[in-house]
Length: 111
Length: 115
Image (cartoon, rainbow over all chains, first blue to last red; front, side, top):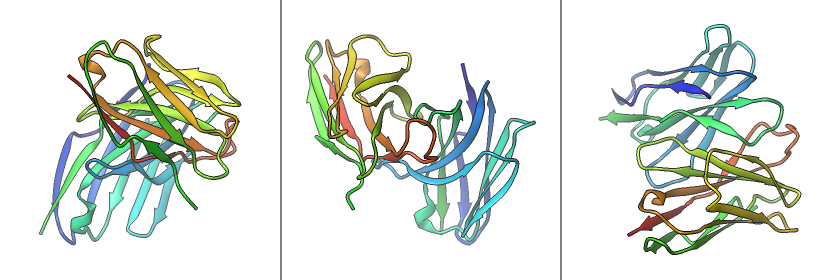
């Protein structure tokens, strides 16, 4: 099976920077996704990494190291609306569909 | 352009009953996946439909079944409901079973409560 591990909870203050880590162990790795999920809502896509390195998209960046089975999501200039659960998910093989999710990291941003 | 839609939004059932949840994929998408998300957990893959056939299946019992229609919409059926089936059921659509798309779009989900 897959072993995807991320912290359960994190807190930070407005304007700060926070890094959410995700480690995974899987065969046939073919990409890692980050999703944001506000309470009671659907997950929304944030980023996708398949090659090593950093992908930057506005205030959000995602990093992948395949050799270490490690990824992180970096959120800059935190805003109150960033309070949400952040889900790390791994894709295996060539077909899109079956994503393996971690339990999610609940981020709380304080004023 | 409508995104992924699901119905109903909320549903309350009792143990032993059967339930049908519905999903319409994002316009242009042909592949639908279903996930179960228990409170405080990440989504767990149930199964995926493409060309009206079940293509992949997660570790869920046969009580969970599905269907995809020619217009790509999909249903999830759960028989003999158990208390443990209470969860948020998410539908996700994508634009290519054979890996041409790298993003799944999720619907708002159906909150199922089994009493």
